[in-house]
Image (cartoon, helix red, strand yellow):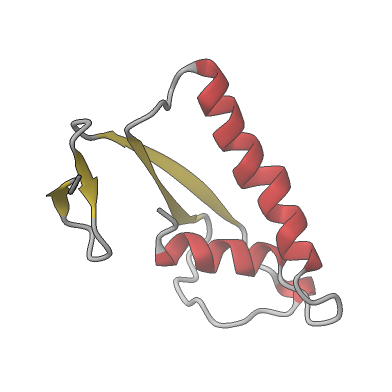
Length: 101
């Protein structure tokens, strides 16, 4: 689950008006996909796990407005893993509900 803070951190770190979505795609591949792949290989995540990706502020500026590439703020992503019972899932509101079969 990509939390809003994670989305904002990814866009702040990668979006460039001059190049469109390409830097965002590269950033996702090099950070998020790589991290999730390593977590899967190491056994940290498995079937039935939900990974919440959140952005964490590194500097004191708490605003999330668009920042030109030369002035990008440093943020990092955190990956929180929650394991739910096999017969449960999260709905769009984030509530744990039974899987309907």
